[in-house]
Image (cartoon, rainbow, N blue to C red; front, top):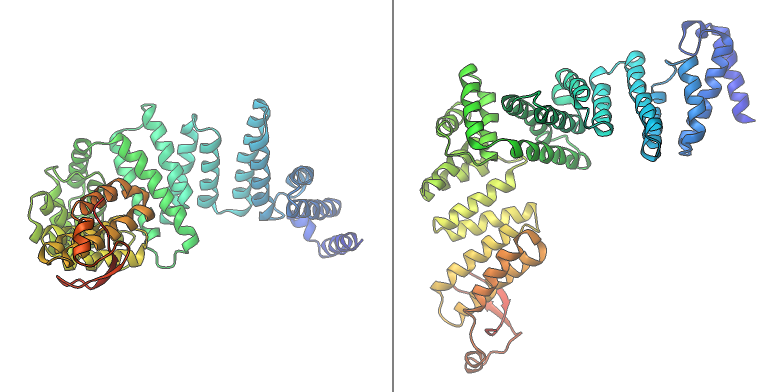
Amino acid sequence: MKTMRTLLIVTAILTATGLSAQGKYGATPADSADCVRNLSLFQESMKQNSYADAYAPYRELLRLCPACSKGLYQNGAKMLTSFISKEKDAARKERLIDSLMLNHDLRITHFGERAFVLGRKGVDLQFHRSKECKDAYDILKESIDLGGAKSEAGTLSAYYQALNCQFAAGAATKEQMLSEYVRIMGFIEQNLSDPALKEGDREYWIKARDNVNGTFFKIADCKDIGGIVEKLLQEKPDDVDLKTRLLKVLNGKDCMEEKVYLQLAEDVHRASPTSESAYSLGQYLVKKGDMSGALKYMKEAAELCTGCSDRVKYLLKAGQVASAAGNHGQARSYANQVLQLEPKNGEALILIGNAVATQAAGCEEPDRWGAYWLAYDYYQRARSLDPSVADKASERMGSCNSRFPTKEELFFRSMKEGDAYQVSCGGLNESTTVRAKK
């Protein structure tokens, strides 16, 4: 009864003020009354997730007053998507997909937000009709051309998948795949580096980045990329932003052997030193075997990347290069910084284990054994916390075990397996557990 009284009051107000003549709630007072009644029924059904009950008032609202509420189209998309996912009849499903596309078009007609809504429409079309990707590609391209970095993560990812579908059909070139990859990844990285990005949204952007990377890396090899990069640089030789993004592409595919690589990295670093350009030069020197020179650039990469999305990568690489250069204390320092950001990072734990095992050579027994026991602890933690390094960690554990003392050697030192042991040599000062060789 309360709902009916509310409807009567709203209808009376609309009629008295003449708002109904404006078209938002219908062309006539009777239309306005029907519009308000159906809008209430639709909203109440949607609140209860009763999509079957919501459909009839939804259709009436589209007929009577399509400009009455943006929520009509937001909830309409949700309702139609549910219908599509459950529909078994192929012909009926196609009609529902057409209805979903119309829902997006009407939202744009009456409420604007063209770039945003086209993104949603293109994502839905790409998902439901993935083999017919030309239409989805055209829609998503317009959305991104209008929205740029404000586009949603899903829109950017779906656009690149649609472009890849075009490429597979011979309707797009590798050059387009690269140039659009550079543009799309620029938008994605811009969002990932935004300090205002909510943690709950970060996973969507990371997923989009991984999807786009996965698609691009399957179709492009270094020779292709190197040639296309050279052509793009000839067209825009002074575009530092483009050079920075192209450098990221070459790094992503580990294409440092391409002749364009070194000059590109030096140009970027000279014009505007960034973590990416420093990392690139460091990686190049690693491949040339110059660990001391590489370490300088890896340190710079980590220092410049105070809040960027690749900070863990730079810190870890700096630690690995420091270890290769014989600076094990610094290697541990970088590894510990990684663990502060990612406590379960197995590569960082292995890096510390390697440093400890290397330091064992400078210790006398039983501290030498203690250093290997301690290194074993770090490898064991790496294996239990990070499955991606399990094999590597197990191999290092076996190497440490081969250097453990025998039970007889422990006996002559009055030591027992399982006892705590404090390692204090070679700059080490940590507790571990006594173990015998297995």
